Length: 228
Length: 228
DNA sequence: TAAAAAAGTTAGTTATGACTAACAAATCTA
DNA sequence: TAGATTTGTTAGTCATAACTAACTTTTTTA
Image (cartoon, rainbow over all chains, first blue to last red; front, side):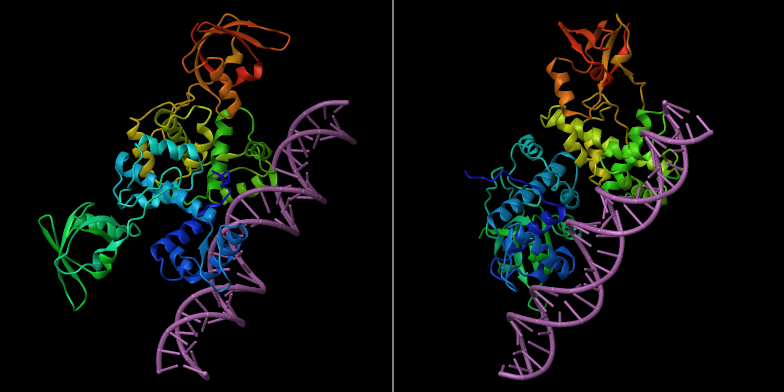
């Protein structure tokens, strides 16, 4: 392995940008990931992202043509994956050992993922016996940065009558996560699509002993595996 | 309790300065704690500390007269104590659960102490069953910021023939901590002062089955309780 | 007690990473 | 395809927190 000794001399901001670009790239492989999209995702101005992109290009973590789509170099990807690994391991620790609920972990993990210590994260991984999924059902990359991406099927893409199992949820919004818990959905829940209403695309679903109607927006943030 | 809702809108730097002032104040109650001393402790220029002191005065965490000694307000002290609590709880976690040695924990804890989440630190405290001493033997303030300071007696202040027990060590230097472990000293070790050499003030000590000669500087960083 | 040394302060500079305003290029759409 | 809209870029500003250099006040000591 010609693995560069992970310099890791990045600022918190540089790390945040690399992770954001990575998330946007895996989230939407088809469309171009551009400067304004990144700015909106990070809730900063396009001028700020443009500036940072320049810096990350100079450091060879990012490349793109002028006015073109953003891409990560191997080193850039590697840094992003390590951040995601740290984020998800911390989330797992908070949920499984420190009584956090799945809607509480994100904000704290955003801070913890920037702690610089390889030993810390690898020992934490070992302490928890090498978990492979975080509390939201997302995969956790291993110490070598390897990970497997299941294709993401949203609940909203199913047809009436389909039966599926809840695999993971988008962890971006606290109120969404609270809502998911409140109605009684959890990882592995078996969900049947009872009806899709043409009028507003809302979806009536059945699970356990409950029946709920959820919006299209809700269903876009729930990822499932089709059972039948 | 008219406890101000702990705003906690401090930057990492502001927190570092408050903690440093607190450490200098409890470390040396007698002498004045001044601007240059703080600068040296934090390894920044006196101009930098002077600047930051101004900001902390404006925020009412610090007070001092021009050219006078630095002091902390109650709120300033409270912030410093909470930082020390976080630092020491993390150190304890790293040592007791993640296989860190006592010379490895400081650097990582310096980062972890700035994570902002009351729930995180209180749950961590509870998870470890409310430890009262960190791996170096230092007290850990409780969730209300209460703590007890034992008078710090250094090994170097003892006389020939005295017997003492190792209570805590200064955690500032990695090489010092490694050295302490290497010669076989640990918390609670019973140490007998066998001889103090006039020439260079070096001290011959006996503990367990070992006899070692240590320098005055070494003995200044070892804190003990006198047994006889 | 007067000169030297130490300690503290001020002014001005730098880098990071935000911002707004103005402008340029690319893409959509009528 | 031309104009409108969206997207991307540039220039210039601000706050934070570091710095050096120069200067002032206080303390030490000869």
